[in-house]
Image: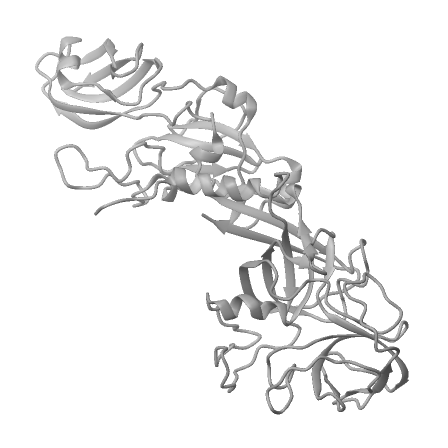
Length: 486
């Protein structure tokens, strides 16, 4: 049974996802970073993949239950994504001279009249939102291409913010849509994507069902030369009129003289042109281009295909909300998007969350080394050092499902506990936990153990990205842009 999911459904899903950040009873989203240990080919015979790739070529995560729980094992920290961190987005297409742009058409993918051949864009695209029919200019203005001078190259960059259709000297016609604000340029403009938003002035000036472009599909032959005026655009709208120029017996130009209103389809027949004075014209066929609902510029998000949502999060050094949450002592290789995680059994709400475990030590001998294995002989607990805070005597660590990073020789994962000595495998450093008490989800602590501030396996992992290692520094900011396509 032939069926499709339309672009409107994709837009609906992107809108619902975006609204989840601002609704009073919406979802809470966190960006997580993790994986301080290197990727390496593995020979483990466990539930995980036998090949993780390498730091220079990590593999794509599997989409399964295991892959959605493992990120909690080696997560370092997470930062809440707020409403201001989210924007609708579209692929970035820079205007460049010498490029032939596609035009906006309402009927890409339909059969051309009398054929079984799809109508496609100049670029070969068979759907509107795969076509290159809009551009962003050097002034960060976004324009929609309405006419490309019969598939010739654009050589004049469009400028200005007029609500009327802009004609340039190269024969192109453009519709100004919106301008990226300074904030959008800083937060939602990347090499491949850019924010999309509706300009209220442009939207207010849009006319629903107007006709501004009519293309010559077949020029016909034998017609009386001249400019033939006052030809009606027929359809379900009203008021639309064109003039048709015939030279050498063929139709050479069509000019919309009155756009009219209310059209969702329109036609201009060969007979109408003949009746207007082009006697003996045969075979002429014109394509009336129907504008989007509301008119060009009425809803830029829908018109330009805003079924992408971009999330922009900056990690600034140790972060200011709590400097113990985001370590700068280690790198990370994994980025996750977490929906509705819990902290201490309740819905997480803090701006930042520490995802590592921690223990306060006394009687320290030597120095714990980042990424080394730590052991507790009395419990057989195994972990991996994330950071050693020698000033406050706090050891931050993770316990994973890896044979050398979180489980003992028998494959068991045991929690560090009690006032039992913890020893570094490579450095032989050691220390004793100050108390046996576990202080759960505390932003700061001075004794005992502290669990992760993110409850393991709580919420849902919506996105996982493995990447080459990112080294952190206290005076460094990592700007992470996630783009989700619906």
